[in-house]
Length: 328
Image (cartoon, rainbow, N blue to C red; front, side, top):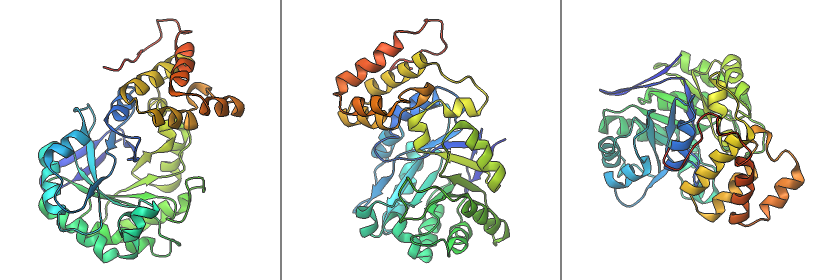
C-alpha cells in the first residue's frame, strides 16, 4: 500500500502510507531522524515554518528539513496572508522538500489571534487561494492540513472541497475542532465524512486521517473504519516512537532498546525542557506505567532523567537489535 501525491511536475510516493505529524517544538530533524531509523514510517513533515514579512530563504528551509532521510519529508508553512507564499514555496523546492503542506489547523491562541492556522477555517476562500498560489509556484505537490472546524464540523465538507478543488494533492483532516483540547477524544466519523465529500467533489483527492491514534493497532483500525488513504500520527509517536515499526509488523521494543532510543534523542536534542516533555508522554515498552513514578520523574532534573533511562538501557543484553546512537 502507498499514497501518491501528484504535483505540477513532481510526484511523491509515501510507502507505507503512515506519516509523522508536524508538532511544534517536537518534530525537529533529530526526532524525525531517530524515528525514521526504527522503520515502518512512510514520510514526515517539518514543524511549521512561519511566513511573515518576507519569503523564507532556502537556507532556512534546508535547516528545517535537516539531513536527507530515506523517507520523503515535507515543509509545512504557517501564514496569515499569501504575499510571500509563492517565493517561499519555490525556495522549499530548492531546499529539497518532497512536498509542501499548508497549516490550516493550528489551534494555538496566539496563532488564531493573528488569523493563521485554524483561524482560516472561517475563510475557505482564503484557504483555497493560498493552496492555488502555492500550486502555481512550485512543481511539488501541495497538501493542506486542517481541523474539522472551529466550533462545529458543520462546514467540513465545504472546507475539504475548497482546498481540493484549488489544487491540493491530498487533505489531512485532524478529527478535532479548534476549540477541542488534545485530551478531547477524536471523532473519526468526521474523517469518514471528509472521505465521502472528497470522493464526490469536482476534484477527488485522498484524505490523510489524523487524531485519536494511541497504539500501533489504531493505525489499521482508523483506515478500516474511515476509509482514509493514509494515517498521520502525532503525540502517540512521542509516547512510543516504535509505533510505526510495530504497525508495519516489526517487533515491539524491549525496555532497554526503548531506553537507548530515549537517550539518543535527549543527546541529539539536549534542550532541558525536552527531557520533561519526553517523560510526560513516554510509555514505550510499558515504561512509566506507574503514575507516581512518572510524577517523580517530572520533578527530576534533566540529568536525573538521563540517568533513569541510562540505568534501564544498561540492563539490556547487547545482542538486542538496533542499538541507536546519536549518529545513527
